[in-house]
Length: 234
Length: 234
DNA sequence: TCCGTCAGTATCCATTTGGTAACTATTGAA
DNA sequence: TTCAATAGTTACCAAATGGATACTGACGGA
Image (cartoon, rainbow over all chains, first blue to last red):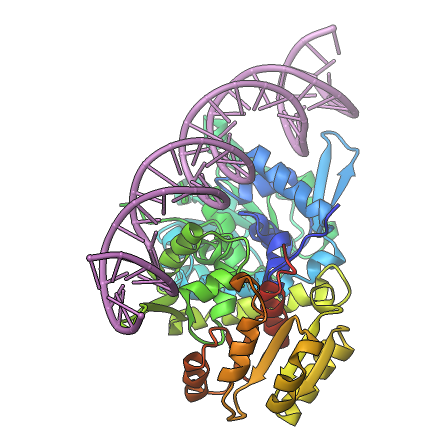
């Protein structure tokens, strides 16, 4: 067994994160564990097979750990190991560079411009989202309470809904209305739950929300999720 | 023409540095221009064709510029553009990570351990090289003057020679002795010129030294060059 | 018992990428 | 005129990677 030799230190790193999707996976895992299906949604263009093999390689290199939950249906979560965390400065820098040099002067502009976004959140969160999505990136942001959201849903016709679970309303009824909004179940209005901790995450999951982001949300992550969910990438 | 869409900012960066060798090329260009043939030597394993295509892509992305010198034989130099420089933090971090996590506790140990290295340099440079290569990485370092080097060359039988051009000796005689040392011209004892400015570089080139490093040398770069030149990578 | 969901495997084929080796273009010197 | 050196290009083949589709296996609910 020959030990692999490298021509320079960069090759050592590349050996581990050189795959086409590996840095992207590490980036999406940066803020906490993600399920297999979540990653599939977050990375449009990747196939099941490729995602599997990339995750297996990251696991073999001990950058990512895989945890199986014996619930029904079975859930598998991937997260960064402590070793994987040591690569965060690199993925963070790559994210920064990408945002700074994205074609189109502001990252996400073309993804969300003109999009109708309904926000059900507390004041602070609402204000931030209105600034980041509405003012900076020209989305049509509508921040409101759960009650008002339910009342005006039909006439607002949002493309996507963001729900802040620090409000402890029961969003079940809203979720059902979103699902009922389309004959075709594929065309349900998508919703993202904003959660601050595991308890809120469990509430979101139990109310049928499968997509969530940890607060405080990082804006590029939010934009990427919105773009993926509304199909602005295809 | 459809504009390319990205799932997250990292993909933007990957689009530009994602190739198998691109980060390595950027790393080798970090400290100044390099000729095509130099890059070939510095990156064992890469083929002419692949190096050409990678360089062409980097050029197309305006990270690298190509400059042709109409001398004989023709010389082509590649260097980072100002835009390419903006990626330096990333390649630097990748280099750091690689050094820190290289298999084998110290980067370069297996490349230079036991190697006979002859150093012709001023005291400061000699001391640094003895510390970095000799003490830390167990090479057999011999620092000496040009005169002594010429006198003892046969009995020292170095694997490689490092020559500091801040000394303004004429190293032509030494170079000739190194070339004469082998029947097979392929097996000439390799030499690296250490240069501090373009004037020293021209002197090195005119005395027949085609491999050089800018002072202050970065130790990982030096080790990589030594390893490549002495064939410790094959 | 059957169905649906999630997280995969398995298989086959297409595309992309990489490697080898030979050939080319330009220049100046012998 | 020929040769050597540098920096390529071209043609052809092999290997790696990616994509489509179908199938599996575990679990709980209807």
